[in-house]
Length: 272
Length: 262
Figure 1: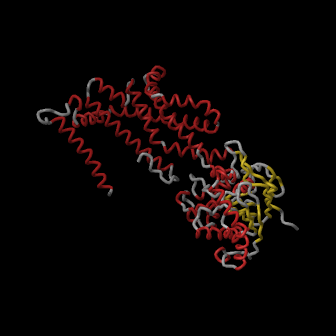
Figure 2: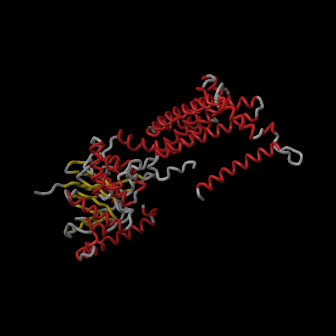
Figure 3: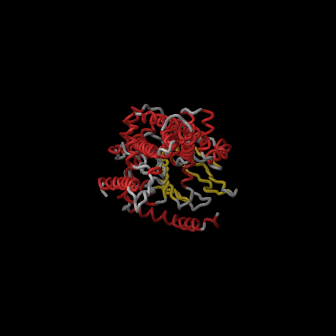
């Protein structure tokens, strides 16, 4: 029996029309399949369109060509099977942490009296049980990410899309959040598409690491399987020999793209 | 600086001003009274005028009228501002069509409308309410419009990804955002509601604080004018304090709720 494919990008191309009428191709023919229960990380240099690709999988953005299939059905409109964790703060600032989490259920019509205890449970499982009454601005960046994680997970989506979710956090908090994510993911193994620019983070978390070339017109240029044993601890896995070997191998490919991306982003005007 | 010290200094300013006023309006300096009582009255007369008003109870009627006009102007102006602001922000075409007219009306000094309102609505409270509404409406309108327009893209996308319908986005995202902008201008809009009421009364009415001041002025009763001004100031400070309390309650989720006008 083969595991079903949760997300399939079929030669998806993403292009934008610029202000002066020219067309900017962000991503060229991306072909990528994420199996059910698989954790895939997309790594690429700044500006390579990896977040764009995620928005295509979420249905927030329509591909210019090619298609998206979610559990073998073509995606039309928003991806209702997916939960999306944004890079920027996306919590509702006028709701308390508890209400922010409960809203995920209330939208579906769950009565508030049922939603609140469940929200409290989720807050506890992300380690914020005692912060239910706080508003987002009273929480630290890491705490806000935890609330956002609970907000997404309470709806029990089959697919998790994560756009550099721990990007704005400091190094230690990122590792703690990574471990928390792995723990929660281990419980029911959703399909995960995780975008990051941090190769170490990608290898430590994922089953597969996908590398994108520098933009514009970036492509997927590599796909590595990470066979480090699970459950993993992010702190310890980085000391593993296999981790180092893989890191060296992938970095040798990624390095050139990072340099290209850097040059292009500093000469953006000429590059377009 | 500790609170009592600050308070003591604040009181000191008032005391110095009042003493100077009293002295300069009663004691000649170099054979000349610097603040002639005919133009400046003196603190004692002003104070006794205020006491007389409150003792006889005549002031309550005027205060009540001004308060009622301010509240009505605020409520009607805000309701209109919220509705139209929301409508314009969600219908860019409508906003674009009406844009020059909105700007035109907003640029008009509202005082010139007072005679028209008096003609249309008579000398009762409604002409004052109408004047206040034209002031409050635009403040609330622009704030709500901005609030709906500037909803964070990410928060909106998050709402969509969480499965919100258009109606739910309204309820959970646009509406709270618009209201927060409106509340942050609460001090200004409530202040303008009072301005509308008092100016309207001053220009033609039979009751209210503006009427009181205007009457006193008509008979060169400077003490009465000053007394009216002091009562009006105290009235505004009380209202402003009430607004601060309401605001603190409504904007708990905001990082700096107490900024406003401080």
